[in-house]
Length: 208
Image (cartoon, rainbow, N blue to C red; front, side, top):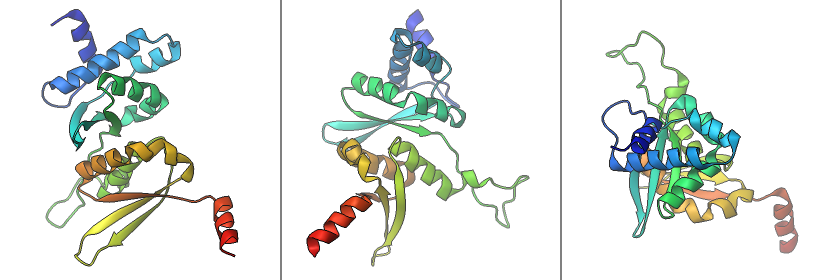
């Protein structure tokens, strides 16, 4: 192992096991960005961050998505450099989409058979963690609302309303967001966009 490769592996801290080939490539891209950037602020932020894992899932025939898991305490730090970090990784991986997700554990609710010394924090309930995953996937886009649709066959579809101003930003990534969320939560999701009050008024006037 070269010195450069050994240094790059410091950017990944896995709870268990050795880094996969994909994780080594992510760590190398992370390290290269930190070493080569001319921005002192970006270099400083990158030097304090690391990730905890990465996986790759298929999106369509010639495209995949790379999900990079980051420690919960570090997620706010990654938000500060989100565009530069994701952009660099997407160049490294031939335009495949990259999504950052905080690595939150879900704590099971207490039952008669299973009890815990401390009360389960709400931030680790199934619903809260799934909502957090959604917000991580969509960052920096704004979620306006959430709806659950129940089908006659018993299945459910989760509908998320995004701000209309974000439509051009996310339109080419919607399929990625849908499949990443499904992979991480086993839930189906669809997206729609809110209409600004001005556009709503214009539409009403056209109907008159």
